[in-house]
Image (tube, rainbow, N blue to C red; front, side):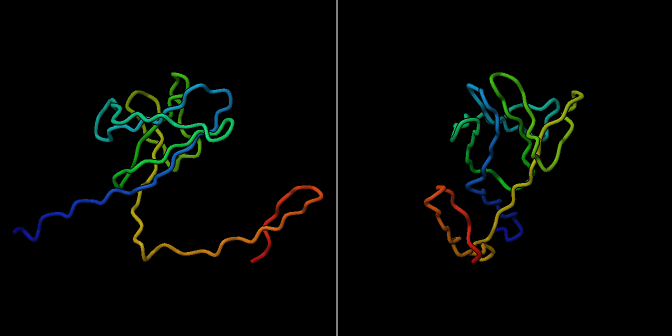
Length: 129
């Protein structure tokens, strides 16, 4: 057995992508092969409209840089909230974000926030914990 063999990278579960777009009929997430020029789509996933105008999907990815775009009603749309933009080799840009695994010991457990409800106005506010 070769002890110097690289350990495979563990996949990161629950990586969320979201896009705000009112009036859209279809929103997809296109993830690209990073090494190819021009970029080629590796995965195309349909997002779900979780509330009017907010589209979301949760996927499993390998750690590292993820290059992606949204496909909104057939039009390529960058993520305006992306951490980074990468040139696509065709005078345009692709959105990019870093996907990093988090060890269970690094997860910080937070107390749930206390919520007070005011019945007169029906508004909720977060109380100081």
